[in-house]
Image: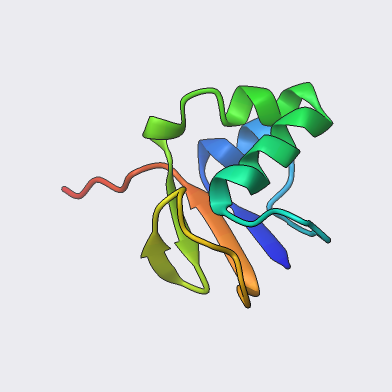
Length: 81
């Protein structure tokens, strides 16, 4: 699965994307796996309410299942002007 990071999430993790093999069942499980890897992930995902997630380019939520998902993207809420 491809995992993409945007804006300050990318800055905190230090990567724009990575390919992962995971046993995570949900987005929340995936985040838990990432946070357990290194401190930089813990910092990036410290406040999940400040993040949005898209599964295969469709907005979703952290309880969503990952069955068949090829791409997960994490980003801050968007604002317009």
